[in-house]
Length: 388
Ligand code: PLP
Image 1 (cartoon, rainbow, N blue to C red):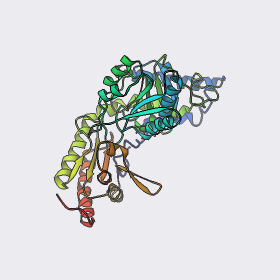
Image 2: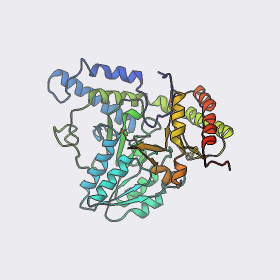
Image 3: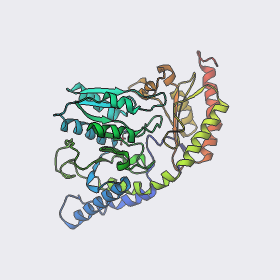
Image 4: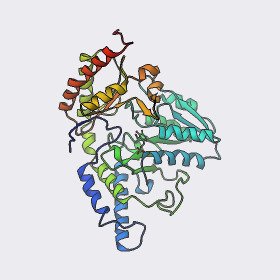
């Protein structure tokens, strides 16, 4: 299962577990029938879909009727937010979210705000944490939805969801959490979290890409986003991705293996950080290692562009991310790092390592062999870098 390169970008995606691929395989070929059809092959596939729904529900501690299949995290977030706001229009159109949400949440909220809604974006601490008191203050009589992520995809901060849900419940406001980075990585129990709506995506926990789900608590009013053939009890139309659904459920059943390796991953992240700070000074941590997803390490390297380090690491067959997204030729610093209070020029020097269950200490050793030298070389080339 281990590739011939060092992969440390598990927050971007994970490899599908071979056991997941095996579970999916028959549904591409022999078992291709549409589960909405009435003949035996279709009904059997419908049974496979329902068994998957039940096993996902068991993992999340909810009823299977509260799970709806989608095409992934982005669709789940769009549906949750648009659907909840549209359904709550009588109460108002005010949404509360945080400054560190994924664009699937932030852009959806901004879209609604630009179309007759209103948005309050609560700030975060320098470690990416939302303060529940800020959420409480932001809620108004016309607030229809609070959407705060379970854990952040750039710095790994785990948000105080239980405390926030206590507030939204008291105030009678719906609460959505984007759990795309947590489902399958840390225990996720919708009852313990107290959320009304929760988004997840298969490819973040060793399942397939292009499939996800939305948990909608029984009795929660969420308008339909996808109209059409009436699948998913008429709440989300579209022919079901049977191989994807079966694979996602199999992946979640295997997720105990990731959850069990949490301590090992956290120790590796700590070792990488200690090793790098010893070998290359002037590094600043963006991840709070005492409250983050296992195996997350985000830091800035003074005097060096994240992209430059990333490309040199790529030459050494090491895959990581930087906090800048090189889109359409312009380098935008990460909105998450800016929200943590980093100046744009500092945010440009960030690197994100996100480890997974196939990573080993040998991978950390290999990075510690290569990265300090890359940093030194790039700093020597920098016209502005002066060691402090
Ligand atoms: N939300 C978060 C926190 C994510 O990290 C991602 C993907 O990176 C998404 C949503 C979007 O999920 P998907 O890639 O399944 O559309």
